[in-house]
Length: 282
Ligand code: URA
Image (cartoon, rainbow, N blue to C red):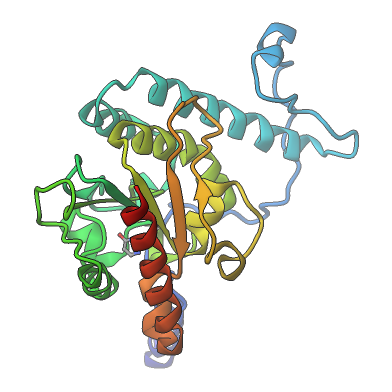
C-alpha cells in the first residue's frame, strides 16, 4: 500500500473512532439498508390476537417496515415472557443474560445488572452502561458514577451500605453497553422495558429515582423532556406487569449531563431535597 493511502486509511479509521464508532457490528457492509425485503410468512390470526396491538397497522407501511415491526414485536413478547417467569433478582439476571434479542449484547464485554443493596428503600435507574461499567460489570462506576455517589451521599445514601434506610440499589434500563456509548434506540428501550419493570417490581423499593431523560421517558412512558419530568412526584405504573404498590418516582438530570453542564447541579440538589421530603413524609 502506498504511504499516502495508508495515511488516508488511518485518518478514516481515526475519524470513525472520534465519532464513537469503535465496534464492528457486521462483517460485511450493508450497501442498501433501505432495500425492500420480502414480506414474512402470514402472521396467523390467533397469534395476532395475543399481541398488544396489530402489527400491520398502516396501509402505507412498506413490506420492509412490516418485517421490522413483526421482528420487534416478537422480541418484546419474548422479553415479556422471560421477565414474567423470573421470581427473584437472580432469575431475572439469568433470563436477561440469556436473551439474544438485543444486539448490544454481541458488542459488550460484560453484562451489567446492578450494584448496591437490593433491600434498600431507594432504587436508582440510569440509562445504560458506559465503557467503565462495561469493563467492570457494574453500573455507575465511571466518572459520572463518582459524581452520582457524591450526590447520593448528600442525602445520606451509600451504595455500600447494607442498611435499608441508608443503602441504595442501582441499575440501568439496558444491561449491555451500546457500542461507542451511543444513545439507546427507542426499539432497544421497548424491548428492555419488561426487564426493567420486573427488576423494579422484584427489588420492590419505597422510592425510585430515574437518572436522566432516557430512563425517565422509558419508565414513565412519557414523551416529555427531563426538564418537564423533574420537579414533581410520579408513580411507577408499569406497562408490562401489574403491581398494587404505589412507588413514588423522582426524575432528575443524569450525572454525565451535570459534568457537561455544572450550572444545573442546583436543580439536582433540589430534586434530592424533594426526594428527602417524600422519604421523611412516610
Ligand atoms: N450512565 C448510566 O446511565 N449508567 C451507567 O451505569 C453509567 C453511566
